[in-house]
Amino acid sequence: MSLRNAIYPVVACLWLAAVLLAGVAACTSDSETATAPEQEGGAASFTFLNLGVNTPLNDAVRKNLESHLGDGYAETRAPVDLTLRPRGLLESRIPKLYALHRRFISDVGHRVEHNITRITYRYPRREGTPFVFVRTVFSNYNHLPLYFRITMNEAGASVVEKLRDKYGKPDTISMPGAEEVFHWEKNGDALVVSRMTNRLGNPEYDVMFYFVKNLTDLLATEETERLRKEEKLRKAGETAF
Image (cartoon, rainbow, N blue to C red; front, side, top):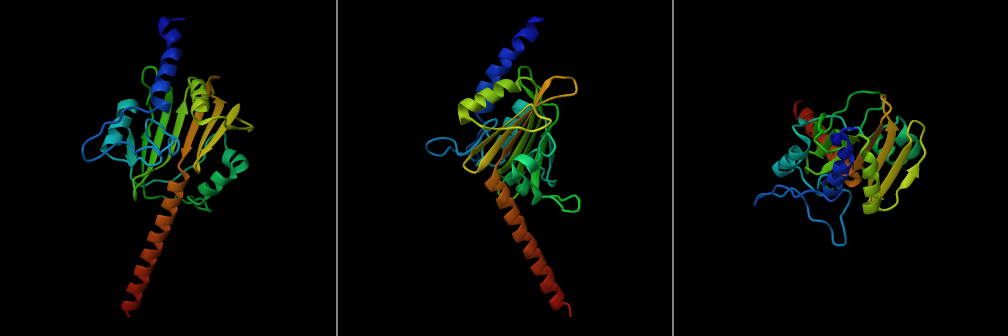
């Protein structure tokens, strides 16, 4: 075994302790901050790279993400997908999240785009970091985070232990297709980690951060916007004749 391979798990573990859970010092200016203050008595919800439920997307946040994940691809309108592997996990084991997911999609399979900003980092690997894929999703109305989707390599094992230390004992879910599934809830939000084996036989971890109130606020705002547009069209039709 090379020296580089031997020290990689140690480096990854230290990096996770310093960044993934505790957060990082964000780039800020006088006019904007990268993070929102924590509530008295502890964090309001779950955090990733110092981003939490009350952290609006701004230039400082973008720079913070780029400094750890590299360049990302941003889309300003896109579907909302709250599912994670293995297939059927939310539907059969976490029905509250599945019901929320259903509210964002079409019953007949049509593509439904929402007023969001979705930033995808497909190759975010850095020396000593566990990330294989990262996607951060924010509302375009209030710019708050909706959900984060992350895939990690075998270093995800240390992530689970540190999540236990920070958020307490999770609910453990049995699910065909996954070796382990862990589920935390905090102030209405949810964090789910699913451990599987990839096609090469190596451990792989899917992680989803769900900011539930922000998701439901997006649905409510979009419904208000839809009704407003319908009323505008109705009035335009009445005055046309």
